[in-house]
Length: 62
Image 1 (tube, rainbow, N blue to C red):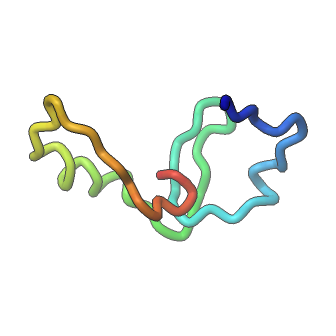
Image 2: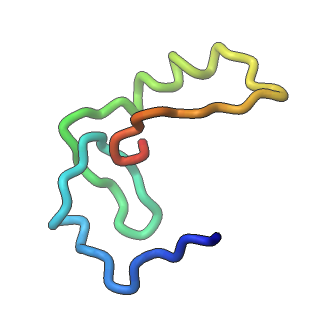
Image 3: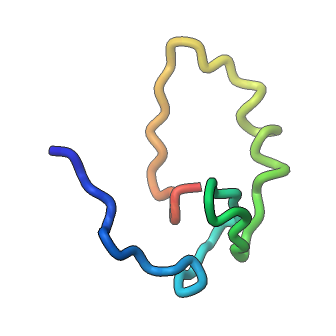
């Protein structure tokens, strides 16, 4: 089953975002937590070759 995006999504200004993120189209979205500068320090040290990641509880998908 393929999930389709909503035909009339809410405006980003009407939404609460936990994480700050850069989204193609809307641009920078401010959240209460900005992990963009620290995330590379956490994940760049891992060799991800041939591995998969299951993120549980990603909040708004950061």
